[in-house]
Length: 189
Image (cartoon, rainbow, N blue to C red; front, side, top):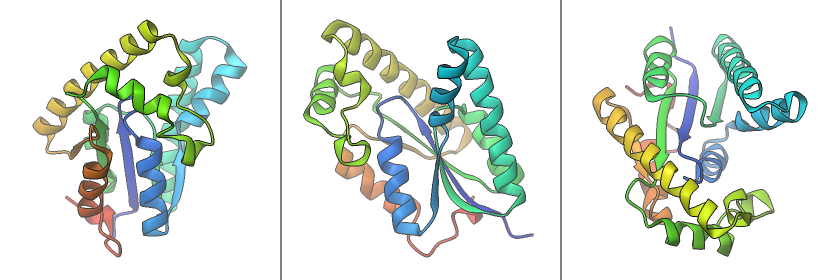
């Protein structure tokens, strides 16, 4: 059986998942499925973050099941999978996961990048962290850096790729090497 050609781009908030997924999708000619959009829609409907998260995670799992069953080619982007769950998808269905993070970045430098418009070209707006007061934004970024360190370590233990996006240009080169044009990422190991 030929594995489905699905790439999962996960990782920390503000790590560049949306940008990376859009680049990969365009370069590889694949649809991009943004799972986090389902969370936002669920949150608007439920108005309870815990209920919205549970609903969005269930929708995401069912959507991935449907993509696998359809043998679709797509880039799936979102922060809803832990590395062990991504490893299980890789083992069972050939999904090619990659996690992004900025575990050793400077929080103030990251915030300055968000405020300078690093996401504007893709989203047409500043990253949501750019609009928060300094103390709140820096605390959230530091929490995401800690999450990135945990994900980096978990990925290393599981043999999954983790791309440090502290330097966006270097991260793009790593992603290009991981998923070269014309390759079938579902076959990666």
